[in-house]
Image (cartoon, rainbow, N blue to C red; front, side, top):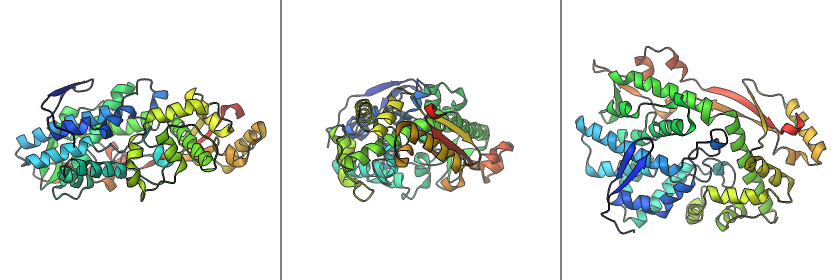
Length: 409
């Protein structure tokens, strides 16, 4: 366990100004190498290929979440909500570490060099490892993170429809991308928080702030997170890693750092992942970027060309529409690519593919946002709102995309 320090640390954040890091276990967790790794993980993956300013990291985001969670605790206690010191520390630790399991370029690794391991499962594994190192000091935080703690509102603040995670990343991502549509009023949201029967609610006078939050989330998804260039960039990096793993498993020499090569050479799934946590903790964006720079001259056509697409930002062409693309169109593009470069259908499939993207700003599956009316009733925000468009945000919108190289258009 790291020795605690009495030094007061202040971070100057571009979103919230000066953030004071509390002494004790919070400070020690931030200083831990597992957490410091987040400085080397971009918050928005390859979105900087679309929005050049989007180079902020998971570290930025986690510190921001910690800050607004402290403000949420102050607000709720001032409104008479009884929160013990242990509960407050637990929820602060839970929000601080909620994204500690993210791998390089966020979600790309989950779909490529590890099998079916979600970043939340990895975050939990890190928290349990840290709990052992910090003499079981994270036990309550883990219960809150998992949603097993009896006071439901604490988990809702960490992982819910209007949690501190979303509240920070919408405002932060809006700032760094320059997309003003996502700029929400975090102070107003926090000021309107309350708890009724251990469930998180929003005061009635905060309903318009919630409406703005939901609309901002929808716009940010379509304009930023699901931007067509960002979608194809994430697909490319996922396919780069899949190809590298495929070649490595076949015995082909593939350059990589020791930590990257470990995951390329071994089959890792959710059942074996916990035992390889230290190897994962050494993996970050720099491992992938440095490897791709070398792969740009690899003898394998697929690995080489995919890597060059990302490094040189010469991405695939992408088309998006409501209806699914005809298989004949995909086959036509594949055949053209196979003939042009004398490659197999399997190899061409790395460059020509289709898929779907979806956006649902408000999903009842993830709980609901409750409004505490002045009459004393607690009702869902959609029913409480006089904005007819709010109901439409509960419907999932699905779009289809098709990607293929520009040279065969």
